[in-house]
Length: 436
Image (cartoon, rainbow, N blue to C red; front, top):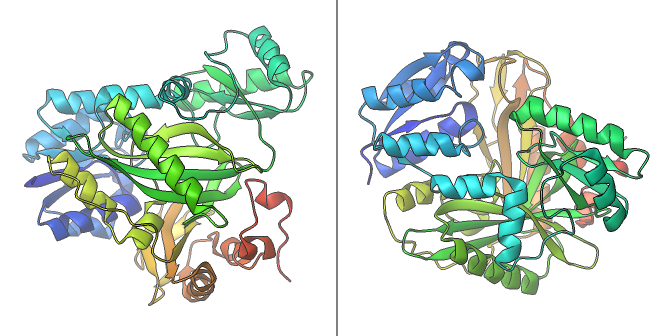
């Protein structure tokens, strides 16, 4: 096992990784920017190292500063968390060159799955069902028009290096496509420094389903079931649950086995998430793979009893996977509590009987420099109805004053009749109404 790990991230996930490392008896080195000098978890680390100015490009995305911090503090491994450099193949390569273990997949696997068009091609060849779409990147607006004509409208233009809805445009007709093509390329270039697009068939009222997997260095791969991530606003996830409601156990088992077989062919290592769209006929179509920890991993932890970060670290340290997944135990739901503006937390009250993964304390300054997520509120129950009831109570108890948040929106979501029935899709907000 590693003696000391550098956590190359900030906020909620940095605090979460630190907690697991403490439980495993591993020393941690945390990094911080000028905007994050006050964060409380820094005091819990063996060392805290300044890596730059507030903008992420000058701190948390500064590979030289992170690698220097790891070298100066005699770290053996780097945990990238999610976001920032977690899916950066160059950073993973540089870690290897510096004799540091990158806690994640190998660089070539990150590269292979990081490009969505390549990932779809790879998984299709490995036997997974994929959405009808372009088999290669679009070369021009004319190329896009021809492919859309073959697929039939509506279609979705997507950035090959995309995420979070950036570089994505829904197109309903040939008339709309030229402008959408230019907009998507411009947005993709700005967000990812890569304007390349591909095209896929759009499924009306599809559900967003993802499968969590773990794979060790000895060829053992397991899946830990699925999560439902269909409550989204502008392609940003707001709420996730496990297992997915009204999702057949037979489909869970069959797709789980297909995923294991597909990943065996490419020799995957570490934790990962495969994302699918589910249509009205219960057909699953592979969309992309995230070669990192997902924000919503706690719901899988609650229904499996596993610490996924601990297993990421154990796998990276060369341990064997000895988990026997027997299906989900109970039901878990997570709300992402986001800030709607910067501010200082003047009062914080955390629910007693629910998990709240966060970096907040009274007095925490929420700055405008980074992702707006303040924390994740997770409830569990023996049944989905019980989990919803527990989450409704927890949302009523959670108090964050001084910073405007999305808490009231979440309270409305978990009271929505379609959500309570488990009958919703990615079009959730088309039918959503605020309760009186």
